Image (tube, rainbow, N blue to C red; front, side):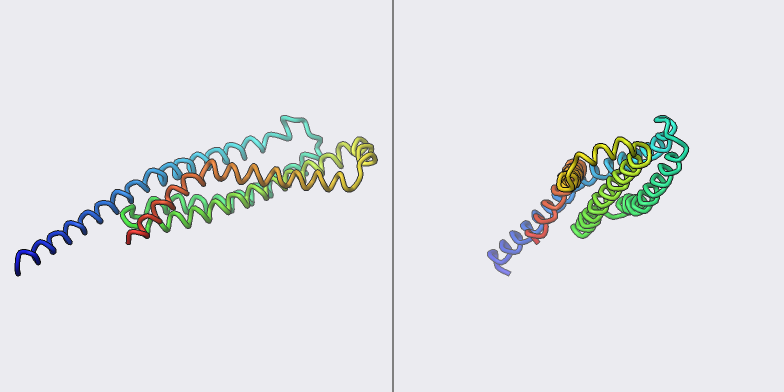
Length: 202
């Protein structure tokens, strides 16, 4: 083997080592947004559990009639059912994220797609709960405030009522999308950027 061949092999080896170290550096960089997301998931779980406990006391705090207490508890039970289903998946993913090995692009990619799916489920749950409680407010007004509602409805056109429903849906959608982005999305985007860089270099 002549000197030139030896030099070429040495350079190739050095380049490979540099590439490996750069990949490892990017994988380590992915840990930061993943750790932030995990921490936020834990906080989210705690906040939601506290909110559900507080919601159980609402009919007593606001002095609802016995009839409306039963209606409220029915809506509350439906809310708890949807929330429990979602959080069972949410918690399972949270626990599994600690079992993955944070030393490969494949693991980071798994976290990215699973978290993306969980964000979509999170948004779906938010829409469901919002409409459940919009439904409860409608039932409450029809049962408890029938006289006042009839007077108001007599003054409103069907177009105005439909327009208000449409605007309410849009507002709920915007708030849900912005909250999901603020709380999880921007950190998940950082994870995706790192995955794309690793994919491009490989």
